[in-house]
Length: 303
Image 1 (cartoon, rainbow, N blue to C red):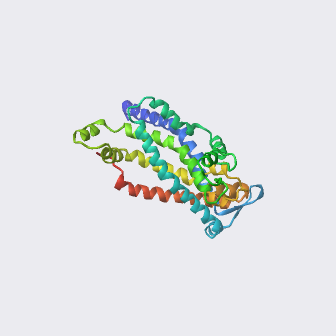
Image 2: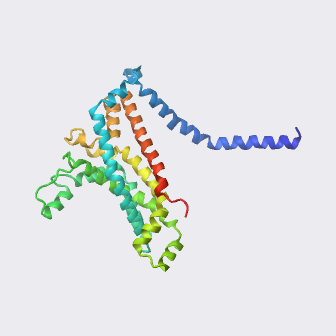
Image 3: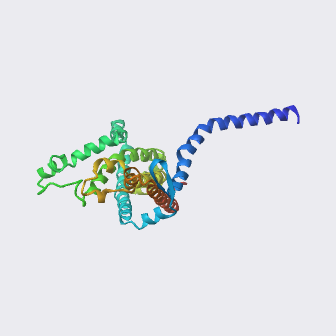
């Protein structure tokens, strides 16, 4: 081996080592915080937790108990209903707001900050404020409705028929700003030449929106939809902080993540909780797979 060849070989080794050193913190963090916990969770789902960290292998019992439980199917239905109630409305309203913010109006920066503000507010603060607003006796919502002639005051978060709607309103309100900012970035990436050509052809604003804006913003919307569905399936904080365990409407508000919390940390049934976590992973994987299949029909990547 000549000196020049040895020098190039040594340089390649040095470059590879330097590259691995740079990505090592990320890889180590991924292994410790994501990969190991996932496989540990699978192992735990086949065991029953005991005192002093003792685990007993019970095979598929956690899964058979889970699928045979009426409460499990109830919280699964609650979670899917919650996603169906929040995701479409959040995306539609966020897209309309993004479209308005993309226009030439004064104070756009202020409006963007106002819409994004709920994302930087602590979920506990959001839950406390909305819980006060939904209060039956002195909540501002009932006060306004009563002043407008409503015959009775609504029990928004203690009525099983309205508790899911109330939680959905809070989540939609707190999520719109973030989704609108993402969709706004997609709108701003659309070249103005498409709109100029459409204007020359005499296209109306309605036709421009559905023939130009929607198709060209669809890649960003696809990402937003995936993230919003994942967030809806994993919903926990708003429900936990707004609905007390003694609330008579708790059964109609429990999500899979809330059920996981109660089983794992209140009932200390971590093996069953691990099975619930894997069930959530399965639902998210199935929904995401369906979305990736369906994107071929509505997402436009090439113009």
